[in-house]
Image (cartoon, rainbow, N blue to C red; front, top):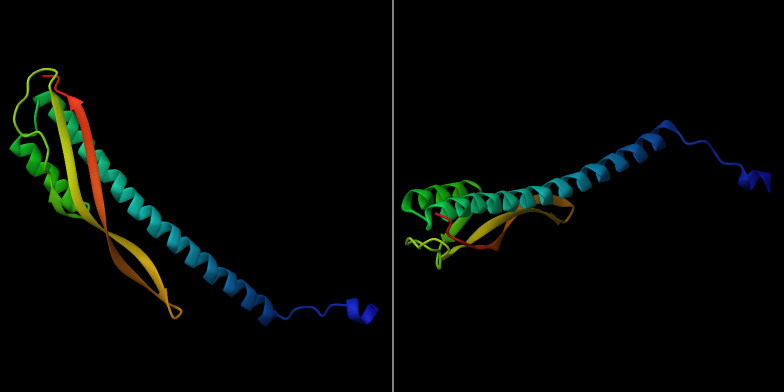
Length: 138
């Protein structure tokens, strides 16, 4: 019975192999988490850029052409493409009037694809909708 319960001590090779497998799995999990947070961070930054544009709109009463160009440039830099500003207030409204910022676009989500034990980064398009409504305060 003692011979069955008596364990043979692991060799250096076995210990190294276990450590390497654990390291590879840890790196894979860390990579997936970082790529997911990267996409979330980009979309959060897009919403912040849109909110800043809305604050300007509240002050001016509408989205002027200079602010519109800046907004489109900033969103393009963040990876948003096919941007549409339909239903956005582009003509001046009076104090207390309703203003709308409506942004539609396509964002290329970067994600890892594991095919046959080989990982690669692929782009998956996703639609982004950002809509803010407020009142003019000029």
